[in-house]
Length: 89
Image (tube, rainbow, N blue to C red):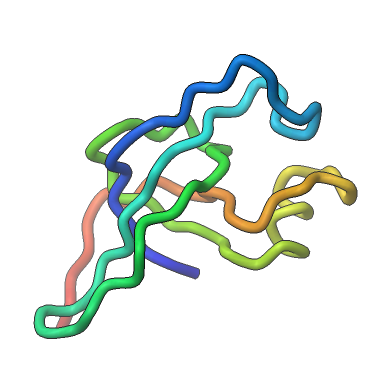
């Protein structure tokens, strides 16, 4: 699982049927201060997240397909939750 911030959207005119009625969002992984962040990536939205939201992402193909209930979906990353707050002790 990855914590990330939604920073943009992807607009397509044609998409795979497995993506039907779902948004593609550009996300930026969040890291602790002093750590190097991974590159931004695209995730399929299963939560109605929007730009500026902090989200929880499943970035593993098998788990992502289980969330979508589609064993043939061509997906690796899926947003599975919108995070209200994060406390680090």
